[in-house]
Image 1 (cartoon, rainbow, N blue to C red):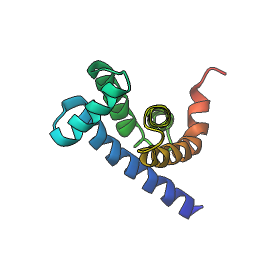
Image 2: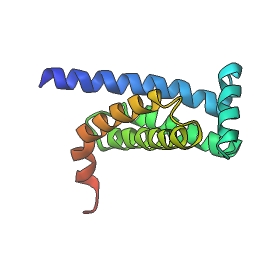
Image 3: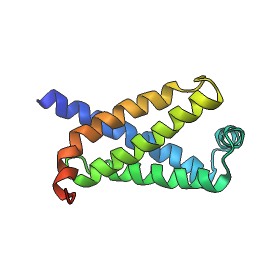
Image 4: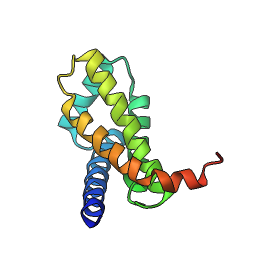
Length: 128
């Protein structure tokens, strides 16, 4: 049980740091070589800067909210990351035949793990 909890926290912190970094590039465009490469890819996918910015906002929310592990907010944060990872997997499959898909699969799997762990906390506040 303790190792499961440690594993969840390691996944949570990894995802939070990764998506804080990734969202800051999408929102602020501060790391020019990475930002330029991502914008080129996004444009090829038929998306625009405004949608890229919105994805960054969702990622930022996920990166912060996921830190409330063991709370319904942690589940929403994991769900936000899970959603953006799903979108990334879809785009990579459709537009570049899975060439850059590996990171999205890793973040999908880790965020799904954290979401499932936090689901009981979210379920308690849902009007079901």
